[in-house]
Length: 315
Ligand code: NAD
Ligand code: UDP
Image 1 (cartoon, rainbow, N blue to C red):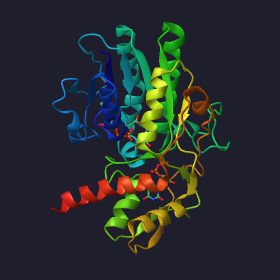
Image 2: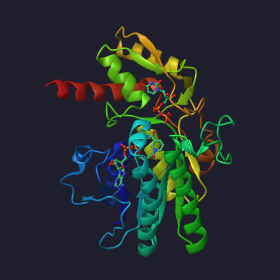
Image 3: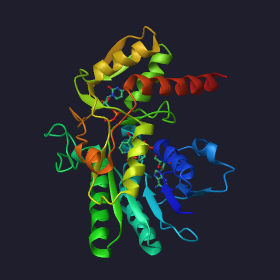
């Protein structure tokens, strides 16, 4: 039985990943300090002898008893409002946390996979973004704490790969959505869904002409699992190339929910990227992966989850 350590395992993506790895027959240890994650995200795994949880801040050194085959580093605030509220913790988990995870992987002879991000491309000047693009990031702007932490993390992973011969993977994740996002985490999918479900105005930042490309969580996890088992050590984009403006997205959510919420315009946050769309040619070629779940289907599944959460909150 292989053992995987998932940092950030109690978060949105981490919890889906832990479930997938257990389903694939692995022993999984989730390590999380619950700064933005929730223990209940892992409820489905409680009681499984293959699963355990360690409450720990991975910016501080840690070890795991026994053999470890994979270390997957997902710990980091990920929503802009979270990392703007926790700038130093974000820099620390991207730098010290990555270093500690790499140290664990090196000590155990494990494969290390970094959850990187499309934010390494910043406000991109190349469109769509291939992995060969180096990005356009403002290091001293408010978003720099997240973007630069991830860029540093990628550099650190590649240094461990080159110097220590560590077996490493880097996934550049583009905007992903689905069940277990916190309704108030500030990202656009939960924000619009929650606003539409409670009959409040949908808050479009700027004029809504900026674009994003949204990937459903199950598609993303499939891509990450394939990358983990592949031989690909250079970074790989995983995301859905279906691009739309944020205004179009607001209209899509309003239509899916069926309410009559108005759309209001609010100031655009500093350094908000104007466009974002993954070039997934590499993932198609080396992983045989592409997204399968349509936006309509993904929104329907996410909507079911948010309806349940809101009903529970009101009970
Ligand atoms: P999330 O906030 O739901 O999950 C992050 C988890 O990390 C939380 O459970 C949090 O408590 C934990 N964490 C944060 N700092 C920690 C620390 N110092 N020690 C231990 N645990 C810590 O966010 P998410 O959307 O699930 O993102 C997971 C990872 O994927 C992040 O690294 C993020 O940068 C990356 N990512 C996500 C997206 C996306 O669209 N969801 C896009 C690009 C990259
Ligand atoms: N956004 C918006 N209204 C909101 C939240 C976000 O218009 O209530 C916009 C945000 O300005 C950005 C896009 O939606 O252009 C995606 O934002 P998110 O925070 O989800 O992720 P980002 O891609 O910026 O990291």
